[in-house]
Amino acid sequence: MKLFMKYFKYLNVYHIYKEFFYLNQRYKSLVVNRNFSIQINITTMSKLNFDIYHKNMIKSNKYRMIYDYIQLETLIFDNIDTKYLNNILKYLIYLPKLYSLIFSLIDYIQNPSILFHHIEIKIFPIEYLIINNRFSIDSLYDIFLCLLKLFYLSIDCLVGSNDPEFDRDPIVLEYLKYISIKVDNIHFNIFKKLIICFFGSVEVLHFFNT
Image 1 (cartoon, rainbow, N blue to C red):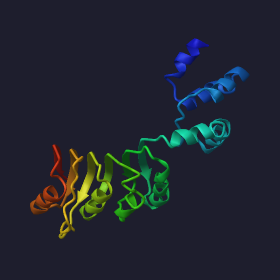
Image 2: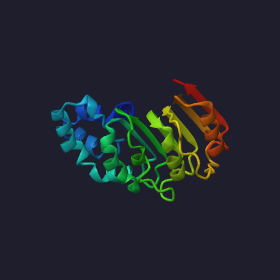
Image 3: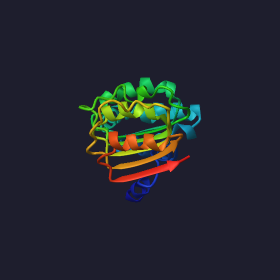
Image 4: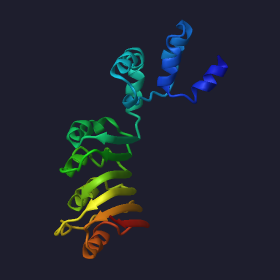
C-alpha cells in the first residue's frame, strides 16, 4: 500500500480514480477519502466519463472543494468566451486570497470594464495581472485605478488609439515594478504619457512592437 501511495503522488487524480476506483472496495474507499489534490481537465473527458466522475468523485469531495476554492490565490481563464466573464468574475468576492489573474480568452475584449467591474481594491489586492489578448489602451486607467497594489503586468497586445484618456490625474502605482507589453499602433508620444501617468515606479520594462 505504501508503494501505491508513492505512485499516487505522480498521477493526476482523475487517472487514479480511473485505474483504482473499481478495483475493489478498499481502493475505492482510498480514492474517495484520500486527501488528493482535485484537478479536473474536462477537455480530455467524454461527457459520459465526466458524468460518472462527477457522481463518484466531485460530489463526494464537494465540501473539501468548496473550502479549497476559497483558498485560491491564482485564477486562470483559458479559452473562455468573453461573454461569460461577467457571470464568472462576480464570484471573485468569495476569493479573499486571490492575488493573481490570468486571461487567455478566445475573442477580443470589446468591453474591458468587465475585467475590473467586480474588483474592489480593499478586498482583492491583485498583484499579478496577465492579459493574453488584444486590450485597449483606453482601459488602462480604469484597470490601474482598481489595482493599486499591482506588482506585475503583462499584456499580449495593447491596442492604441488616437486620443487615449490620460488627461486625468496620474495614478501612483508604487508597487508596480515589472511590465511586459506588446503594442500595436501606439505612437511614441503616447508611450511617454504612459510613463508619466503610470510607470514612475517601474524597475523592469519590456515593450515589443507587433
